[in-house]
Length: 404
Ligand code: PLP
Image 1 (spheres, rainbow, N blue to C red):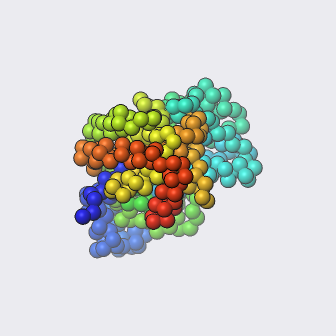
Image 2 (cartoon, rainbow, N blue to C red):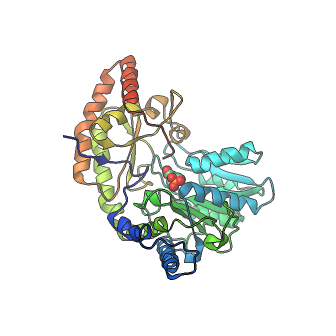
Image 3 (cartoon, helix red, strand yellow):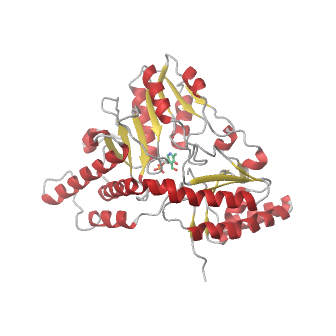
């Protein structure tokens, strides 16, 4: 009998909610019109897109005309940063952090290779930014600031309200990658002066391949994709109507469930975390225990490889994630944990558990039942044995690493 699935990797992606699936279904079948066409079928699709825009705007405390639908978080991040920089003199500086997701981090790297000045701010051992250092980095040559709202690996929350005020007072355009924050923490852009904000459908129970970019009224904008006049000329390409409708419904549900994220889901996460830390010796929490998402815990198991833990958890039906990305045979610890100065022996054994409203007490019980034994077994193996085990499990179940 196959083991029941315990899905604790919701920062990687989330299951599509039933209500979301039902809402999008007609737009894949009977209401399939191209929203740019001139008949009633097309008008249905147009109306549905505008309803979705209102839902997303409401979730953010924004106005519907400030929402542009995109293909996801990556496109939204790229569009925002490039829009901001293109409105400033050539050579204007991008200021960002060392712990951003690849959707921002690798764009910053490319911009630097192309000759643009880029400042990447470090974090302390709990993953926190130093706001004085941030203020000092915003000089007269700064064109744009990009700081994530919540870290995808550790869940650490940055004080975006304060950072937005600071950027505003210095006349610097401010983008925040809120892909992990939306739906998990309250966001009110009518009170927080961010200029751009990225979100992604598949992190809040809508499907993959749809997202949105908030662009404050009056903020500079330059379309990334050039073509048709969709999205008011801000994002060319026939709209992903079903995906957009799904995102609208997911946004409505997120508003409904946000308090549950911060009560029941948080309590489940806390019980899981306490249980692991008390039952597994030499386990340590990575990140700020207070200022972080309610659904995420990132725990290092010293002298054990995160990848081996994940593979053995998978055998028990448990899906989690490691803090490390596998690059051509060598195991590189995560850039986030490295930026926090987590010792090498601990960074390698980092494991992230990220929950959602679909998790239950039984899921937590299952992890607490199997994990201590897995850690014990891996520690008992010699380093050579551990490598062999990891290699054999890896060939049995090869899976490429990706941005999460
Ligand atoms: N930013 C953060 C913080 C993320 O966690 C992710 C996805 O893992 C992205 C951006 C990219 O979003 P998408 O997968 O929708 O392109």
